[in-house]
Image 1 (tube, rainbow, N blue to C red):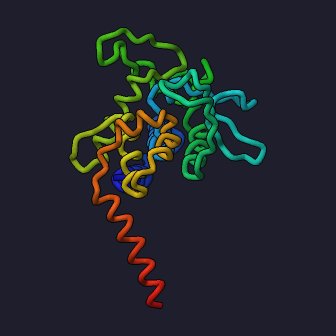
Image 2 (cartoon, rainbow, N blue to C red):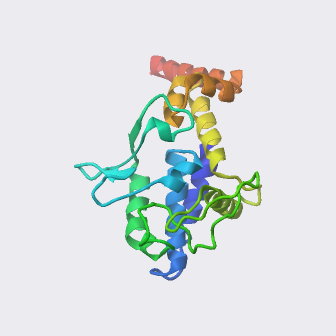
Image 3 (tube, one colour):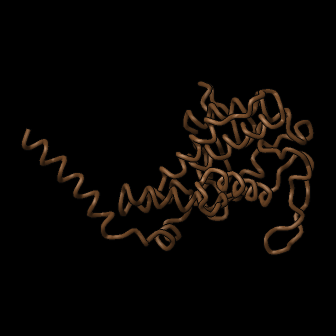
Length: 230
C-alpha cells in the first residue's frame, strides 16, 4: 500500500511549476511538504491546521541543537494519546520543510499574521462549514482543517491515475495497513506509529489476512534456506 503513496509524491516532486518565486510555486512546495509529512507521519488533519513554528523553537515544529527537525505535541492535543509526543522527522520531510519555510510560506495568505505552519493560497481557500454543516471559523493566518482535507483530495485526484481521491485520514489507514503487512502482528508498533492506544489499533487493523503472516514467514524461511545452502 505504501508504494501508491510514494509514487504519488514522486510524481508531484517531478512536476514543479515552470516559474519559481510565484504563488503557484509556493503552493507546489506546500503540497510537497503536506504529502511528504502525511506519508512519513500520518497525523490527524487538525494537527496540520494547528501546527506552529517559531524561530526560537518554541512551536510544535522545531529544530534541535544538531539541526534535525522535530514535531512535538501535548497529549491533550491528540484525540487519543498515551502521552506527550515528540518525534524527529526523516530527511525527505526535513528538506521539504526548509524549502517551504524559505520559499513558499512567505508568499501565502496570512504569512505575517501568525505562526501557523501551513497556510492557504488565499483566504478564500477556507471552508465555512465542516462536513456536518457545523460553522468553521476563519482565523487570519491559519488554514482550517476542512480546507486542508479538501486540498489533499484535490492533490490525490490528480496523482492517483484516475482512481477516486482520498483525504488525510486515509493516509493513517494506508500507512498502518502497510506496516502490518510488512510486520504481521506488530500492533504495538503501529500504536506508536499513529500515537494511538493499542486497543484502538487492534480494533481498526485486525483485518490483516493469514497470508500476510505466512508471506513474512515464507520470506524468512527462504532466506534461511539460502544461507544454509551457501
